[in-house]
Amino acid sequence: MSMKALARRSAKRMLDVGVAATALAALSPLLVGVALAVARDMGRPVLFRQTRPGRDGKLFEIIKFRTMRDAYDAAGVPLPDAERLTKLGEFLRRSSLDELPELVNVLKGEMSLVGPRPLLPEYLPLYTPSQARRHELRPGITGWAQVHGRNSVTWEDRFAMDLWYVENQSLWLDLRILVQTAVAVLTQRGVSAPGHATMPRFTGTAANDPGVAA
Image 1 (cartoon, rainbow, N blue to C red):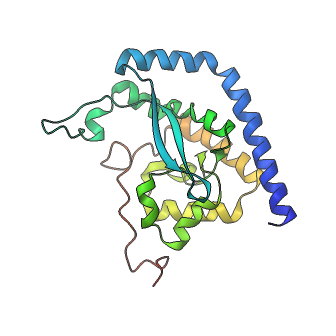
Image 2: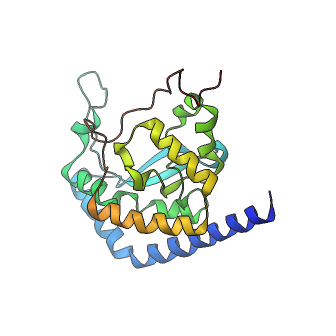
Image 3: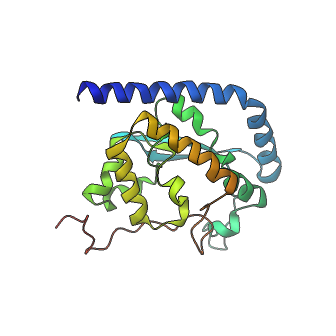
């Protein structure tokens, strides 16, 4: 890795630690309030934990506030997201308050403030070579795709934006994305995909896509 790349990575990490530590301290009353509201609305645990792939595909446990209740059909299969998402959970998602515990993941070095969003481990074998490059960086709480449609864009467009970010990442770009994220949260743009409570599952890219290896 070049000295320029090392300096860029070091500056990014310093921004992550400084902002995450400050935000956790400043927002601690809000975090407690949200935790109490989730406990009252959905019960315990108040945190949602799930394994996600990070940089280089290394697995870690992401931490978020719960937004869905436990509900199953007669066969014991979880009900669709739209039926399990509570009114409080919908508000937490629209406001992105459910993401605040991920600041702990940032302090631990598992995530960054800005980067491609961490998705599900079962998607790893479905990526094309270019899509897999999203794992060259730490995943982020927000990212280039999140400020350009969030969950309302197609998977292919989302991955293309992730790749653009990987190839163009800089401290100034991260600061720009953080500002744009604040605007997106206030306007609540692209919280869900059309016809879905969240985002439909990724099932792979069509074989005729230019990014698919022959």
